[in-house]
Image (cartoon, rainbow, N blue to C red):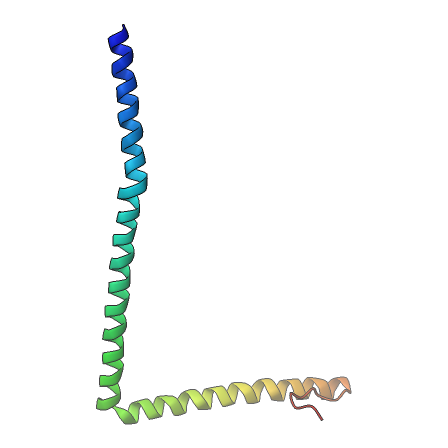
Length: 103
């Protein structure tokens, strides 16, 4: 019976050491490896995207300029609509419209 107790005690110690080693060494190393792989993939994808954007700009500069103009016009139109609607609703209420510029 003593032999069985010793074996069980030894087995418990071995399991404790295995769990301790796993939590201190194996899991953090695995997490470090995953983090390193993720960083490498993000960096390589970022470099690929930057290269593609540079290539697009050299191949189609008019397209980029046209896209920037379209975006600017959309932004100006959205601003004009929101500014005009604010002015119109304030006029209907009989109050002065609010401006962003202090007087």
